[in-house]
Length: 325
Image (cartoon, rainbow, N blue to C red; front, side, top):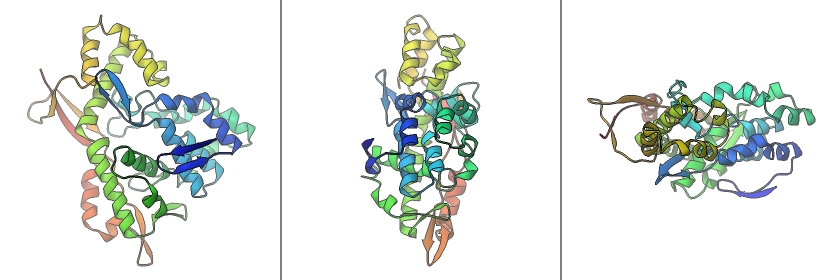
């Protein structure tokens, strides 16, 4: 399998187990799950797919010599994502706005019910070992640390939104030492940290994306409550779910209103003094490790101002949404 990745450039995949996993229904479904999305003029606009990001995490881990089990863990890490990705964290019964972790809660069960266990068994690979993130510190770490997942979606989002031209500068300045990601110098670490913060402020935890996520969540919740879709449908694709719901828009005035809201029809503002609903959004910030004067240090160890930024930006964003009448 050959291709061109927007972050890593030309690539070729020959490993049989990787190819079989990529071609499985479970991985292929991610091609139609938006990594980030917005709605305009009644059509879904996708930044990039969960599939593209999953391949990217795999490629990053492979490039830095991670064992095959860790490469597989990176490749499959998003398979339990529902339609519209984190928008389902805003469905009324999800209760995960602050952490955006619905897919994480069901990941183990989801994988075990898929064809992935049989594929791994065919290649004498241990499923339980691969499902345990404690075994793979390069693939997954808690915020504020870097991990392959976080590095990839950060660079991928930055390139899509034209914050950077490509990921070469950051990839070339990264080391994987003692099972942790370390930048070669403070300059590159600081640049990545500030880039990540900018993406968080402008996109991931922005008011506009939070409103979209909430409106899509409300739209899906209403469709579920009316049995226009089932919870099983949430594990199909964005387009399939929209096509199942759309026939009901003409006959359901509330659904029609919600559809217009998620398509950016109608005004809103953040107004703590007069609001219709309080909405939270996960906030992301990183404190990368780097080599500095012969030692490994965090950006916040060198730039003390970064400590206060981390303290502030680590808190979930809280918005007081007032919708136009």
